[in-house]
Amino acid sequence: MNVKNKVVIVTGAGSGIGKATANHFAKHGATVVVSDMNVESAQIVADEIVTNGGTSLLITANVAKFEEVENLVAKTVAAFGRLDVIVNNAGIGPHLLRTHESSLKEWDQVIAVNQTGVFYCMKVALTQFLKQGHGNIVNVASLAGLKAAPNMISYSASKFAVVGMTKSAAMEYATKNIRVNAVCPGYTESALLDQLINAKPEMDAILKSVIPMKRYGKADEIADAVVWLASDNTKFITGQTITLDGGTSL
Ligand SMILES: NC(=O)c1ccc[n+]([C@@H]2O[C@H](COP(=O)([O-])OP(=O)(O)OC[C@H]3O[C@@H](n4cnc5c(N)ncnc54)[C@H](O)[C@@H]3O)[C@@H](O)[C@H]2O)c1
Image (tube, rainbow, N blue to C red; front, side):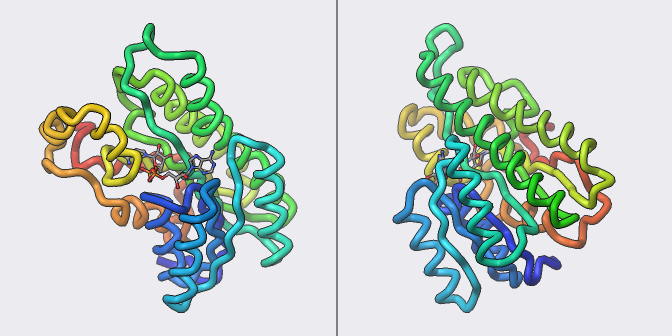
C-alpha cells in the first residue's frame, strides 16, 4: 500500500484500532503523528514506532476540545510542513442501557467525543487540506453507524453521524483533491470491547453467536483497511464506508 512519506495523524492512537493503525502506517513508510488524550499509552506507541525504524511524533489532544485539535494540526504542519492524512479514530464506547435509562451526561460525553470530536478534526484538517491542495480523511465509524444497535442510543447516534459527515464532506471536496471515507468495524478486540464484555459477561457468547465468522475482528484487520483507504491505491474512492464485520451485517 502506497503511503510512503505521507504525514498522517491518528487520533486515539494509544490503544486498540488506533494503535494498530499507527503501527501499520509506520510499517508502510509513513510519518505518523501519534495522538491521544492518554499521554502514557500514546508515548509507548510513538516509541515503538521509532524503535522499529519508523518516524513518529507524539502530540497529545482531547478531540472534544477544539483548541486542542487546532493545536494538533498546527504542530503537525509546523513539524513536517503539511498534513496528508487524518484518521479520526478516537472514540468512547456505549453504556448498554435502553434509551429511557440513558443519562444526559452519558449522551453528552459520547456525542462530544465520537461525533463533535470527528467534526472538529474534519473542520481543522480540511482547512489545512484546502491550503495545500490535497488531503485524505479516514473516519472510524462502526457497524452501529449502519445498522440498528439497541441499548446504545448515543453511540448509535454518533456513529450514524460519522457516516453522514463522511458522505457529505466527500461531495463538498471531491473536486479539491480531497477524499473522505470511513471504515465500519463490527465487534473488534480492544479495550472498548473488553469494557463492554466486562460490564455484561454474558454478552461474549451472544455477540459471537451473531457473527458468521464466530470470532471478533482484530485491530490489525481494521488497520489494513484504514491504510488502504488512505493510500494512493484508492484514488477514485470517496464517500464510501467499508464494513469489516466478519459477515455480521449480512
Ligand atoms: N472495538 C470495537 O468493537 C469497535 C467497533 C466499531 C467501531 N469502533 C471504533 O473504533 C475506534 C477505536 O476504538 P477501540 O476499539 O480501538 O477502543 P480503545 O478504547 O482501545 O481505544 C480508543 C482510544 O481513544 C482514546 N480516546 C478516547 N477519548 C478520546 C478523546 N476525547 N480524545 C482523544 N483520544 C481519546 C483512548 O484514550 C484510547 O486510546 C472508536 O471510534 C470506536 O468507536 C470500535
